[in-house]
Amino acid sequence: MASFWQKFAFTAAACLLALNLRAEPVELIFVGDIMLDDGPGRLIGRGGDPLLPFSAILKDADYRIANLECPIAESGRALDNKHYTFRAKPRVLPVLQGRFDAVGLANNHVGDYGREAFLETLHHLDNAGIARFGAGRNLTKAHQPLWINRKGLKIAVLAYNEFKPRHFEAGPDWPGVAWSEDAEVISDIRAAKAAGADLVIPFMHWGWEREAKPSERQHTLARRMIDEGAALVVGSHPHVTQGAETYQGKPIVYSLGNFVFDGFEEPRAKIGWLLKVNLDKSGVVFWETREARIDDDGTPHPASGRFTPCGKGGDDLVSSCQNP
Image 1 (cartoon, rainbow, N blue to C red):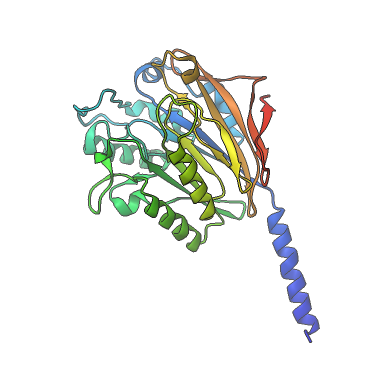
Image 2: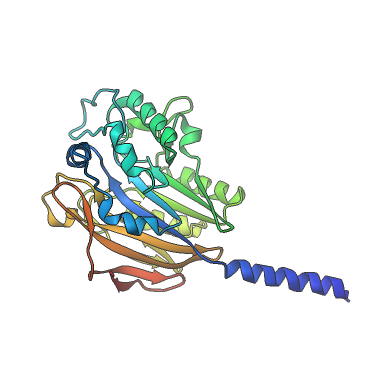
């Protein structure tokens, strides 16, 4: 028969677990593609700020993450075999500082000006105090998670690119991005959980450009990642939003679309989503998207009154919430 002290210890442990699960949620923000060359870069050069319209929304979150769709450098040379190449000047860094805590670099444009510009980008981000993930000085560093520790919650965010060209993939002793090989993605999710992650979030750069619906490949991989323990899945790259769904009660937001980007004529490429997600140790508590309308300079503006996907953890279906 259990002693009084054994029963007391068990009860105390159960109460502590319940308190941890009911702790104040951590609020993360994800946005899609941020490209600070061309129109946004010129706007910044004139003293403008493409993130100003969303500054209040960004400020309220515990942690903010974006996909940085360009190197930030003075060095390097544009790759000859790419139709579009981007490179932002280091003067754009103050616009990111204080707005985003981390940027994902697993995409098809961070290597547009070669390895020299890529390494300069890492240097600038480090000096600016902006965390980076999904790419690095070698294969091991490219696959390391972004670790977020907030309010007693330990979150690992992983990032991968699967849009060609693949030649900028990191290798054993050369810099580049983390490529989305299924076996490596699954291995990284398992390793993050083994390292103590309460929650794991893959941030994918995938899908076909300008396709409004996710591909079967995206469906299959998203479900497999959740089967392996991902708390939710977030995507970018297609330059348009691609809808959202739930699987096993966990949200999949296939593409957030553009956030800061110019040069698109199609109206749907000028609409992006900001994703807000509240998390505790049980997983997703609540999530919602906010619509961004992007002007000709590439600046996003909150679109009040619009209905966009949202939901609670454990929901079988995605709901629709009106943007404030």
